[in-house]
Length: 334
Image (cartoon, rainbow, N blue to C red; front, side):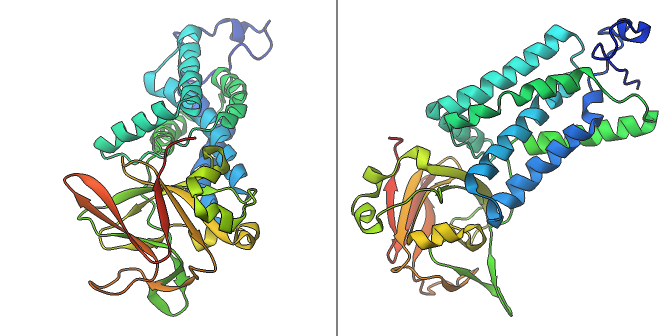
């Protein structure tokens, strides 16, 4: 497996002029340190930073866009074994077009999410036109597709390329085996801290998608509580994550570790919640009416719950039953 440098080097070089689709290796860009750095950033961001509360929610959302647009087209080129310039340009154009369409069309994003749900894939797609700011990173990805390291050993190149394809595919398909987030209670492994919890009382694991109200949004909580769908718009929410929740398991729907000081000072919480391919639901509550407290991770049958959304299923449809001071509304994008 030879990874030769392409025409980005000295254009008068005899070696550069001899590069052709026949000798070009489409896997070589996956050996580049920038591709691996982007893959690590994409995985770390989606699996940890979005829940850790270390960075602003708008920033974690954009990090995934930039990293994903560098990882995805090079991965597609490698998977399809594309060698010619025209074929690689087509792959890049496909990635750009699909990314743009998903950010601009809530209907397309929702349709893809529902279709994936029927195949057992848990997708989290939250359209946001501001994410299109990441498109220029495709220029850097194209640069990497034309210029690859050529000094690695034969076996090392093959091993790294194989690992890269596997990890890249896993990171780009927005599926997740993340467990439900539980903020621990010291000395009590079966307890967690939370206010509003989601309890899965179905017979199977479900993919929980959440988008939290941005901490940059200021609200009059009493006014908003009178009619949350009237005062809240889709662009006020930031994509935050996806986890898998097991049967009988409870989880705080706004993880404690993902709360910034600004969010807590606001005094009320709003989020968009969907389960697998279900319709999106708006959830709202006020902090002074729903305190954070220790709660069981796996409540016993009949155990009283203070403030909860209990998920059940009937005839293939998910049903939300409410306990306590929680408001939920069927969401339609304003």
